[in-house]
Length: 236
Image (cartoon, rainbow, N blue to C red):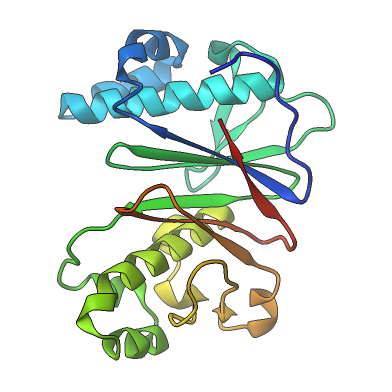
């Protein structure tokens, strides 16, 4: 990846970066040197070496990319955390408001970067649906739609909906501390969409935009923001 400075996204763009955490593993030592003491401590808490290496690679790459926007060395990028744990960057040029969100599932990582509005991103490996998971994710109306689907369609629809909800909740900075029905979607609509209701309100839902992302055939992913009229700009 080039080290040239990056122009921040406009108010009508979200920059999206995607990478393979395992393929970047050869740079592990370099990424380790980029991390803060707090990140080193967290890396040491992983039970399995594979998960530790993926965490270090993801955080190192995040710092490397943010550093290119801020024209700073990766190690100098200052990250702090909101009340629910969402990180934000405090080392930005005057007048900038770069917001970001990082997600990874297995070896797939994706980073969304916006300017002037919060953004959320989620990547989910499509896998067998565990018993009870639909009850955790769906509202009552969504569950009715899900139960009416042919068995062959349930797995992709489930993870598409999960990614939409997780990305939206991450844009709020809350995660799943809110009930699953806070963001309700029409499961018959695939790809880019708008929630049917947010907090039970159709008016609030109209302010939201959720874009589908395609990190690979075995993944579902989405980018979300409470901001209208923006598009994904793929970055590399």
